[in-house]
Image (cartoon, rainbow, N blue to C red; front, side, top):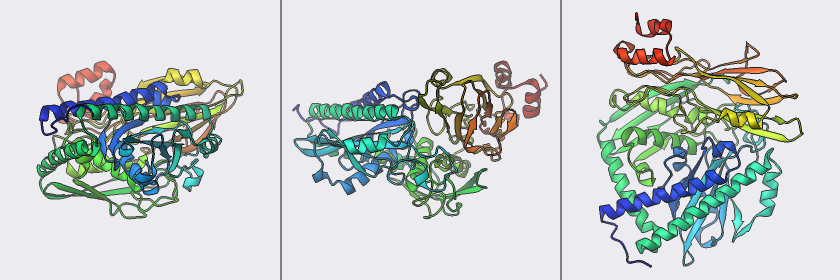
Length: 549
């Protein structure tokens, strides 16, 4: 082992931190390169994480889903409750997709691999990935219980001392529509965990350390100190706001109260709607993750992502509320709640942090439509179509078409057309859709999809901004809503599943983001640029900005 490094030296610590991030990115590259499904390989609905022996997060890739840093460590702590450290051994890997112990829905599978030095548990290398199919009815959002939504895996050993749990694998894969894709993604996750674990062991050897926890404690303390300094810069007080969502099951109210006291923040969701009869319920793990993430972005965006930046933040929600749903509530569409939390937080803090907040995003919730069916040769297909509306206006610039706060890419339409019998007849920006402001929101986009096969294609979808558009902040204007048409007629239920017969066309208009600051303050050159890019038409510019050319 190399001579022990001095962790108090800032240069050494910075180099070590960069190496940790690099190791997590090597694991992520392995996962992406080996993944079978498009939702992992192309969209990036995954994360890899290095953690200490208690499951506290150390480092995460820059490109993966940031919210999983709030769920994966908690999942590892649940693993340790069932499998105490002294019962684990080299070659083990643990798995679950329990929504209340993991990421809030069944589709996201978590695998954690314990890391050992001389037989002692010193760390975990973990990953989360959205499975292309998890069984169930594909009746997105309209299920009544979690049992309808897919196959549940309690905390279990997927690999036991180097030997796969063949019975669990067989049971799991026999309950999904695309077993080859799912098995391929599981293998990719295991490989990613192995790369992360081996890299961490090599780093510890180079540092001359025999325990990860010592390094973790140093990183966590420095990060916590920086986060507390950022919180202390916000005036003490109680800040409240709310957003309304729903459309399918009726209006749902999400109420937030933020208490700032010194270097601590408490976020409470008391006053939010009770649990829904349908799948919009959000387990507390997901509410927590999507609360700490936008606060971190707002307060100290350049701070390294690890457990330290989360310690000053406390999140509470009443049991049985939409933000803390209890078993066995359906929860597949929990991101309809989680992805709206940022909007309530930004509105609550807009007056005290006006230069940092964003407008509300039309891209929230990120929509993952599922196209499934049988090809002409009899083979099955299940493909995930990830699509994004416009973000809210950014702190100092216009919004864009992107997946905020999900951090997911759009599925390439060429990939879908090559694997499913569908044709995209249009994929285009919707002119005049962006919420106006000094900084406008991101525009919406329109997709037109035709079933070109000789048999039905099941289209599963969930949309949330049919009536509740993305609001602007600090005088910015709201965005535009979702709209779904089938064969030119408005779809009566934009949540759940329906069949597209051969030749049928579904026309989807995605919502736009809200603006920031009054439209009268928008720069002339910015209006000209939007006209040149087709984001505005002359008539739209007149309506939104009083533009006369």
